[in-house]
Length: 397
Image (cartoon, rainbow, N blue to C red):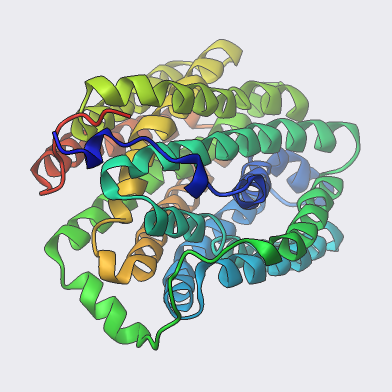
């Protein structure tokens, strides 16, 4: 095995703590919505299916905008894009908190999603610039620790704040933090060696003409539906069975704890297993979780499904994310942006198509469909990752 494969992450190249706070803030904002959907519906006097649009429109915007941020990041640099996106999140979250009706809230959440997607995908590109592919997933796993903490903080905090005060109060928290971080990141060193002229259309064509990229994006739509879309209905499923938003948020917060545990376990697992097996194992965890919660939606099953989904995020989703940073290295920002677009397009499709069934409390059907969507991700995803030219052997991290 080459010396490159034996290299671990050098602390000299590890980003400072402030770098990780951007994904933390945007993940807390994103995952807070699940336990707050029913309180939002009650507060604004609209049915659950209408309130679910707050998640759907966020995911849709998050899916539409990443290619634009990718092109901007390739042209102007990663740090500038992340700072601008964080400043925008501060404004959009403030509008969310002050929304007088559902229409304004939906517009605000659409804006928030379209701005927040400039943070985490760009952070992945930043790591892609700094670390070779053979050890990059370790760096991504370190980033996912903060994603996990943000996920847990969002689901737990959103449920508790909505139960004790109002869902409006929670949106002010990421608004304030995002605004402060946009200023604080001004000293973060840029990862792009030099700015260069970029034709966004040419960049996109360069990416979508690669067969491996098209296959990855197709898988990303299904993976996004399963990993991010259907998961949204775990907390509402508990609330529909009589649990409070606080309890639902607490139970689903196990998802974030499981992501954290999974990312900590990633290094020893990666020493023993190649990426295709890690991907397949993560997908199997998600499949088991959806099958379990499709049978019964109580505290025990939803807690177990949340934990299994968190493990899937740490192993399966991180493998897909790392893969996306390598698929077209010469247009890494655009490729990662298109990948994120595919993921969140899938998430938006899942939440929108299942909203009616969730509103009718047919959560058993929702999660059966989710399980069916995971199957091709597991089978085709594992085979494709195995056939990918850069698959290789387990990396000594």
